[in-house]
Length: 186
Image 1: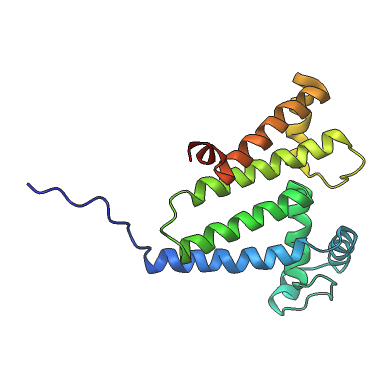
Image 2 (image 1 turned 90 degrees about the horizontal axis):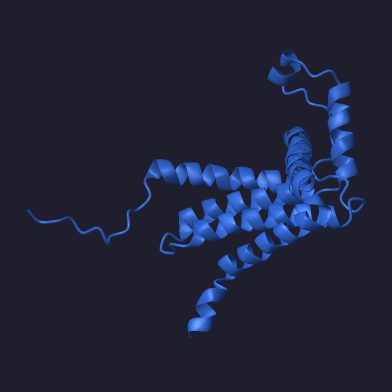
């Protein structure tokens, strides 16, 4: 029996392209909702809470006016992304989702893009914690998840050990992203 040629790259199906396009658009919306001033995002969310949103107001699309560029959607999701992941890491996650969707739609021939984007996520997450560990007063919006990981590492390795370990992760992820190991071979 003849073997099938496994060297051919599989083209994305229409369903996968539509999903990628939706992720691309949502990531752009979320990006513009979180890059704004954190005080504005907090004020918008507080204003939405005070307006007593209910299902009837939602059905009628009777939303309060907010300052967020993306409207109530941006105010709500921007607020919660920053609370959960922190400001810097939220932007990094959204950019990663954007690039994964973008590369999936337009550049399927690069085999390493997913690993590079995952390395970027680890780079951004570790950098966020390192910046916070160096000076906790700089980033007041580190987020629940990074703060939990920071507390975990500090309880085991103390602050300096945490900075050293996560700095090593940052440098390693930069090497993966920029493929510095290949530059030595040439």
